[in-house]
Length: 391
Image 1: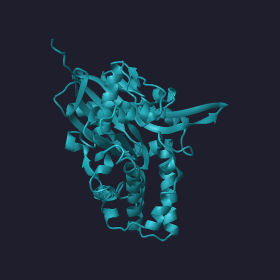
Image 2: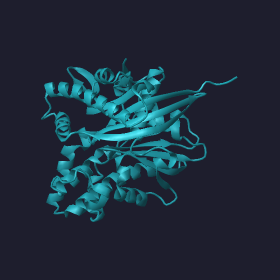
Image 3: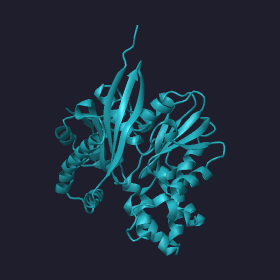
Image 4: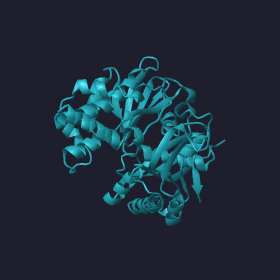
């Protein structure tokens, strides 16, 4: 008896909390006997125009957000996402008719995973924009999007979503692994040795690149939007007294499942830290070195607590932070010497493309009507099929 092999091409779109641009990955998904393999065919990041980026950041701030601009940006981003798809297809030998679906994360504008009282009711909420109907119309390709809301409706935090794919792709029988993604926010997926889905732990650890980016922008008078090659931090010294104060933030002592975002560790938080550094008369390079150490120390503190009990031997890092040698050096130094720190590229997954690839998989599973969340990570009461479809 032969088993049918399914091969489909899916485009995954990801634009994260750093608001850098649109990560666009063409992914070949091969499925046979319930085993799924992902192969990256093409990847590119299409930067946001500066005016668009600034308007998105305004929408993330309650003091500057306007309802009409939110509505306009929702439609505009749908159009820009479609343009990104059309652009990457021009760069390959594939045609629109070869693509089974587009899967878009959207741009997060607001994320409130813990319920508050609103109009007399308890409400948790999240909002990702970039209308999928516009994407489908402008590309002629079925589009899946708006994943987080279904998990939240089932009692979860709507995040993190990547651990579902981390488990499928990286679980090992012989030893444990931690998958790390450093975007605007840092998150980890802990895969215990020979564990099943219920053993997976995953959550946001705190700041990633957002605060580092803010400090790089301030130090260079706007000439840099990020610490290129970690050179600014490399020229500084970590101010341990200040760092010890920073790690006292209450989020770092919360127990998982937990998730966070720009609302907690965004521009307002970065401004407050800059003002603290001013009051302490800390030199510029020392400021960004300490902020880089904040990301590394809070991230590794979470990993260290699982090393023994879950037999962790490898830490695999992806996301924009993996391109910062100073941040990677700090992470390696903070971890025990018997734990190997690698990039996901060592196992065939482009670290910059990983999240876009994984959303391609989440969309594929949605279209197949398969559950694609991980309750152990999000806190959801049950497995659900996340995603909405624009045919």
